[in-house]
Image 1 (cartoon, rainbow, N blue to C red):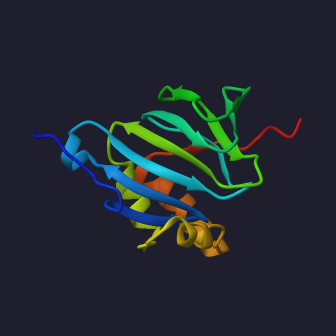
Image 2 (image 1 turned 90 degrees about the horizontal axis):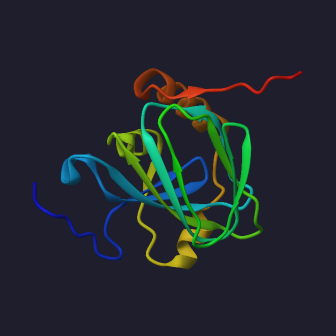
Length: 162
C-alpha cells in the first residue's frame, strides 16, 4: 500500500440528500478507511441509525447537535466525536449556516454508498458549493434509505412514541 495525496479541488464530490460530500480517501487507496469532507445544509439531518463501522467527525465550521445512545452533544469547531460500531446516532446542523466537518469511517466502503445514491457534481468554488445545498427530492430519500439498509447494512431506528 502506498500513500495517497488529495490536493484542493480534487476528490469526487456528491450531492447527497441536500448535503455535499467530497471524498478525500477511499478503501482502494488506504486499505482500511474512507475520509470525506462534508458540507451540511442548515437544518440538515441524518436520522437515528447504527452500523458495523466506526465513525468519527471533526467539526471545522458551524454548529452540529449529535444524539449518541440517547445523549445530546453540541459540537462547535474543533470538536472531535468518535462513534463506535453499533452505537445508535443521529446528527443535525442546528445553525443558520452550513456546517463543515471531516467524516472518517472504518471499515471502509461507505464512500461507495455516497457514489451510488448521490449526484456527482463539480463545484468550482465555495459560492457554487453553497448554491447546491438543500436540493433534495422525496425519491432521493426513499432510494437512500433502501440502499442503506439492503446493500450497506445500515439499520435505522424509529423513535419510541411513548
